[in-house]
Every structure is written in C-alpha cells, then in structure tokens.
Amino acid sequence: MEPARVTANGIEFAYYEWGDGDRLALCLHGFPDDAGTFDTLAPRLAAAGFTVVAPFMRGYGPTDPAPDGDYSAGALGRDALALADALTEAENLVDPVVVGHDWGAVAAYAAATIDPEAFTQLVGMAVPPGFPTNALGNPRQWLRSWYMGFFQLPDFPERALRAEEFALIELLWGLWSPEWSYPETRIESVKGTFRTPGTVAAALAYYRQFARGLVARNPFADRERGGIEVPGLVIAGADDGCIGSELFADADDAFAADCRAVGVRGAGHFMHRERPAVVAAEVTDFVGR
Figure 1: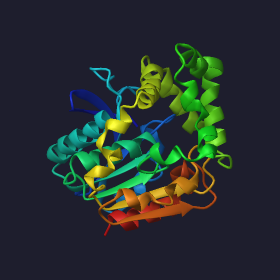
Figure 2: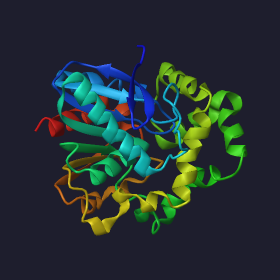
Figure 3: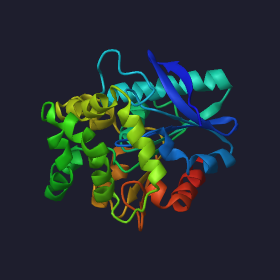
Figure 4: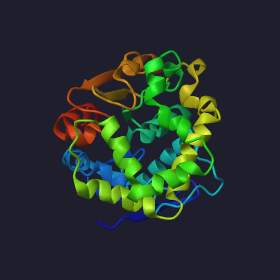
C-alpha cells in the first residue's frame, strides 16, 4: 500500500487509509512503530462505518520532520487536531474519533484537552493519561522505563538504535510484549521506516523533549483544567513490559467525561496486534455508540 499525503499544521503527512465510511477514525502510532501497525484494527473499523486514516507521526519515515524541531506532546496534539480538520474537510467526513497507541495515545490526550470539541470519542492504548506523573511513585516503573534514561545520552543512542540492523527495536518489542510472535514483515516494515533519514533523530527527540519537562507543561497532564472532556476508552495489556498495567487503575481520574479502562489478558504493549479481535471489539463497540 502506497501512502497518500496531506498537509496539516505546517507538515506534509504520509498516511494509509482504509474504508469509505462517513466518520473519520484517526489512528496514531507510537515508538518504535509506524502507521502500518493499524492494519489489523483498521479493516474492522472500516467495516463499522469509518474511513480510517493512520498517518506516520511527525518525523517518522515519509512524513516531514518538525519544521521548528518541536516534538512535544502539545505539538503532537496540534497535529492530530489539524489532521482531523484537513481530512474531514477533504473527504466530507463527520464525527471524528481518535485512536492512539503509545506516543499516539499521548497525542490523543493532548488533542482532546486542547480542543474538547474536535473528537467525539478517544481511545488511548498502552499509555495512561497522566504518565509520567503516576510513574513517579512506582519504582518498578522506573526500571521498565530504563530506555528513556538511555535515550537522554548524546549521540550514542542514535548509533545504538541503528546497530545490528536495528536490533534494539527487536529487543524492545521482546521486552514489552514477551509472548508476541510478531510477523517478520511487520518488524521489517518498521525497520524500513527507521532507515529513512531523520527518523531516528526525530524518534529520540520525542523522549529527549519529554525528559526536559515539556510534556509536564502540556495540557493533557494539567489536572487543574478539570480533566479530559471527551469520552474515553483506555486499554492496557496485562503483560506489558513497558508500562505496568497497574498505572492504568486510576485512568478515569484524568477524565471529566466518562472513561472506561480495559485490561487485555495475554497481551503486552502491542495489544492491538497481539489480540486484534479482542481489542477491535472493544474499540468498535465504544466508538460505535
């Protein structure tokens, strides 16, 4: 599948599209991943009446890098809002929903708080709202998040990520979803995205700016605003080696609107790939209401 392109928030985004329904489902990927991660969920959403669009996030693969070097959560949220505007107008779509995995979930929380009217529903997978605030009191999570500290080093993480044909990606997938026998084609696709010039630097910039406190100043983490006003579904993998499922226990506290947190048994960080039918049923039931 060749990606299409759209300009939003000053960036030309490459994206995959499925279906021709009258509602937009904007699906946002995380790290280390790419837009193809939704190719099992998207057909089910398309069958439920959605036009499904999965962009490569800013700086990833064929999508442009951030023109101002901004890879903060707020920038990702503004991307999601601008993409929804551009796509609904171009394709005459209505009632958009946003589905985010990992960094895509961070983008979804930010977008929903910046503009509560933009999306009718929000699905966040693998990252709870309020992370890293909730992680501060959880020493086990500090150990799971070792890679975030590693990524703060100058220069060496870039070389480490590229080494041995991106073996670090395989290591992280194995640690985060220990029971997942992922298809070789899927990880080769992701490695191909990371071979694109600029992708490694951009992906690491997400974490470096996160660590500098930029995320803490973004609206999705600001509890004084009264919480996210968009109805939400937050999904955790019970066996996630990246972010412990216990950090999702109070996910609804970050929402002023209704929110339900779901744990998926037998799945880790990439639950939408490991248990595609289970996750798709949860998502389509929620956004179809």
